[in-house]
Image 1 (cartoon, helix red, strand yellow):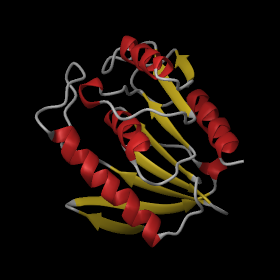
Image 2 (cartoon, one colour):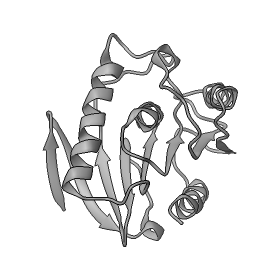
Image 3 (spheres, rainbow, N blue to C red):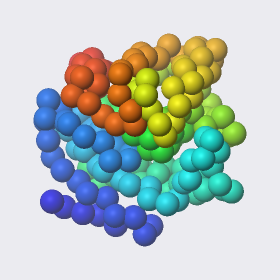
Image 4 (cartoon, helix red, strand yellow):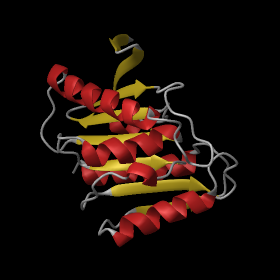
Length: 188
């Protein structure tokens, strides 16, 4: 597996087909060419979620690093315009929404699994395909945070695809079927 180092963070790059896509780590940048470039980027301790509030300027610092990383990856691995999906789980989901709406790259969509929008410095919202998935038994990020995210997006003209599953703070096979279908649709 190839690794790249970016501003103190290590990201692993794998080439897989979309149908083989089965897991998230923290933030995922997906490019849909013949295969999908899956970049697993763990934000580690740069962002702390406690009651959905980032500590200090950690979200801004993470945002800047991730926007730079996305630009560098697109430069390093040329991708057709509009063939990128920014996706994440938990804190990565929060960052996927944040950077997915802020990046200068044209994205095909955003996936947020078990995450929420950070309203303290919300991104400029525009019409983009967004998939929100959350567990009804999530013990880390309460269900109301996903429901609130849906409401905020809808109030700003974004019509997210929204799914709740009987699960905790996790990814299940059932939820990944929804992700796969979303990816196939936005990459068509």
